Image (cartoon, rainbow, N blue to C red):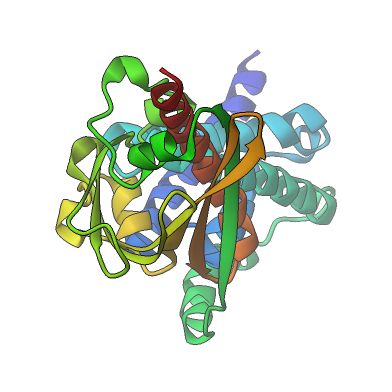
Length: 315
């Protein structure tokens, strides 16, 4: 019993060391610890899965339960600690969760294959833990590619184009009972409140107001009454909330809103198809992963906004 307790005490120490290592990398990388970093999103979670197993013996390494459970427990404890001390918000951890849990498990399996039935080398282990700190400066030297992506939502509304037009160019304050909040609103994505326009023509300025004081300053680039309106989007920097997610995304250098377009298509029989499309730019070495979350979050936002417009136009 004593030996069994001692063996698992070592694993617990390994988990604590793993969490400490994760926190160290988070503090060191600071603003670079984002979805735009290959080092933080791929290398660190792999090593995080290995660190606690350095304290395991061969018998423990043979257990696939340990290979899966120990890295997951380490990552979960690391995430919980960051959340409690305010280093990350729930939405940030949700986005990081996939790569961290998957790669931590892969790292643990790789370590098992290499290390089982072999004598441990503390020097090699220490060097492995230094990899992120050595790789990150190299990553910074490589220019990040930029890509523009488009997200489209649509709804069919039984009314006239004029009624819909009056609900999209300028938006009166959206009351709480008009808007159905979703999962992403619950974890930090602000809901839209209103939009004002100084001139309804090309060159006019449209200001979108969001929960928490966030403001989009938009310039109308296309204006065909009752048909189509487009506008460029600029986030007002001083309106960005100080929380971690907003600062990473809206005040960072890798995500930028480009423009948005409302288009009305007459389907006949008193029905109008309203299409809302948004374009955004990602500048990182892992744009594919940013696109995955960008598409999901923007699609959810657009669908809920169109629901408000549809209800207002038909009532």
